[in-house]
Amino acid sequence: CSFDKGLCVWMTDSEGDLKWEIKDDPAGGRYLSVPEATNGRSVKGARLTVPLAPPTKAWQGGDLCLSFRHRLHGHHIGSLQVHNPSIWNRTGGHGWRHAHITLEGRGLVD
Image 1 (tube, one colour):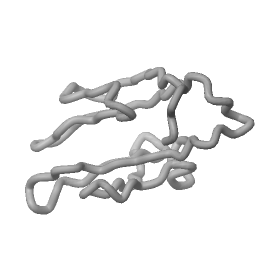
Image 2: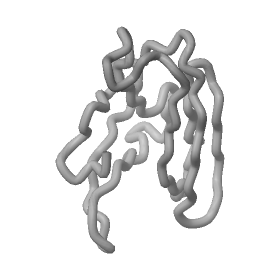
Image 3: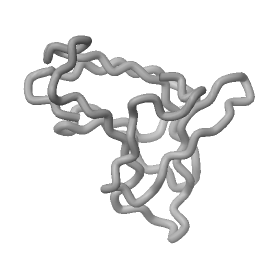
Image 4: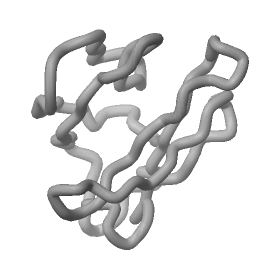
């Protein structure tokens, strides 16, 4: 999903206390961003989920690869995490970075 036409199959998770926003990239395309918390602090952050259960024909329950580019930028930046359970975490960094994460298919629901 390039976010050029919206969130694709991704859904905003209601558990978060911040909301993802789709932004235009000056270099072309679009990306997701999280605005600073208006009260100066977020407890739950912004969350995205994609439903996986029950396995579809395209996905038969095996391992999945999540590949994405990310940039953590701002004065009060927290961290970017992949959960289910927590399997990847990034805090800080300079510029855009690329991540490849293997999600073990057994037991994945979203």
